[in-house]
Image (cartoon, one colour):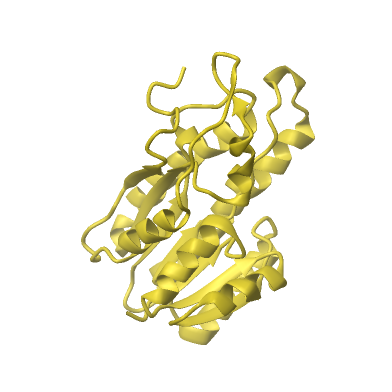
Amino acid sequence: MNRICLVTGAGSGVGQSAALALLGDGDTVYLAGRRMEALQETAALAKAGTAIPVAADVTDPASVDALFARIAADHGRLDVLFNNAGISARSINFGDLTWDNWRDTMSVNLDGMFLCASAAFRLMRDQAPQGGRIINNGSISAYAPRPGSAPYTASKHAVTGLTKSISLDGRAFDIACGQIDIGNAATAMTKVMTAGVPQADGRMAIEPRMDVDDVGRTILFMAGMPADANVQFITVMATNMPFIGRG
């Protein structure tokens, strides 16, 4: 394989795992994120493929435009976008949320997702041959909230709507769009779960986590689908986490 791929938030966690899985399959992967040092660390872990670190801020339209302009100039096309960059937030009861709390989460998890998907869609539509694949990183929070998670939960519900709209509008241009919903991958973002997190019944409980590389393998599976097939939604989660039956 030598797909031209872009992974946002590629400096750590899920983004790093996905990038390394694609690189391991022989792809050319643009590694995007705010911290060049972290992106270079991801690139150094690659054993195959071609890793190209590019510092970019997904919340800044000019930065996103520059990122996609470089990909277009280098290769003239993009085959796969893993639209991954996102942030979590500490648990805050809805009544105590501020506008800044809300906007901090939405600017990355929704606005950034839109900016990257929009730029990828236009490039995939205008390239020859047309087509490509956009994979949005949702969350199991797109289906069921955690206590005190209104901004994060709302952003991930919105990502689901975005995924469906892109999938529908992309049909005319051979652009497939799917969503991966992840539950408790072992990353720095979920380390707090090893000490206990709030449950719906008010308890604090330690939650199981799964190897983040299980996510990377799933992204590779989605990216490798033939052009006439799409993984519309897929959930990958720690087997024993309290999601099914949460409440």
